[in-house]
Length: 427
Image (cartoon, rainbow, N blue to C red; front, side):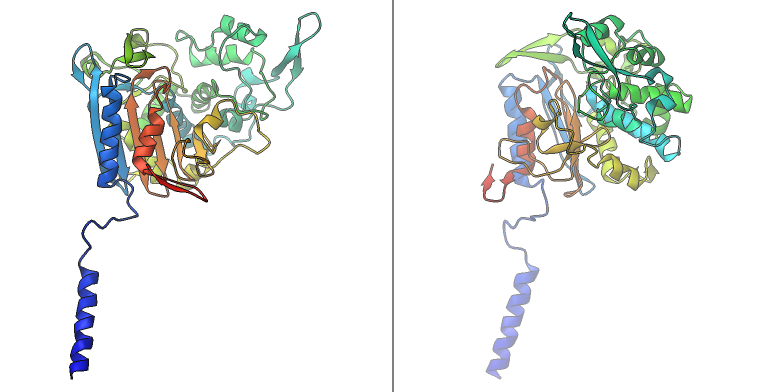
């Protein structure tokens, strides 16, 4: 009888231990813990306190729930306007993934194949020449392109377009043609770009540049609708991204953040050159830049991507299309990749960088294999982490691009742990 009672006591003890959670227990499947929130608050506040940013805000969703939001400092320091979740910012190249999604809606409609020649729809880009150097007399040497630019090339930055004007032969032609002048239409931009030689044969290198502006032109050409109208109807309106726009109306400009230029440690100067980009109507509606947005608006876009093309019962793209966009499109033979390696162990998909391997060292940006992400010239950032069902958006208005490693610090604060084959270090 005593033996039965003892066994019964042990059984009750085991059951009670299992049913009562241990104090200070941690759900290891959760990324944004109380400790992560404390790290995030500390990191972001420190950047403001140090004088290296005027204001910064961040929003994180995990497993379809908001798990972090905070804002520090000023959207407009001179006007004493605080940074908050309604602040409108210039997102620059975070426009690109939105353009890519717009383009891929036409792909799903069967309007093109990724390996179609660009010239099939845009004869402006037929018979492209490639600049390969100068002869002994200093004259440019031009070759016929080894193959045509494909639509896949313009989605992964392997078309061969030169990025910016400089003193080189092609750079001078680019400066003279000025295809991205705001007074050009997308058609005029394409006509001018198609007349400028490429700087490498299509598919041979990765070089960031105007490829996504050409994507916007392709949306316009294939759909027969102005690009701004198409992206509004087929992406922004469907996701109820009401504050994501090329033009900010007068009544909303009170929420428009100022841009700041960091001169040196703790010294910021207000920028006055970019403001009218968004307060006047311009003929050029770029695909690679030009949108403004809010934290909540851009988070809707990020969550749609994480949810494989659907948000709140609204489908923008099919799951297989999102998977295609989030798959590395760069062959190992593409060894010249400009600044892309500075993003870490990444390839490039359709308008996103794709993490293909874990960080090789603690000095790299944190992240999970399979995540896809991009950022903007004013130091904004977003990423989608399918493994952890996490999406993050970081907003700041800081030139030049991330001179203070804000992105590194933010990612470290989110994940909190660096792991390699031989080490594990708590941050």
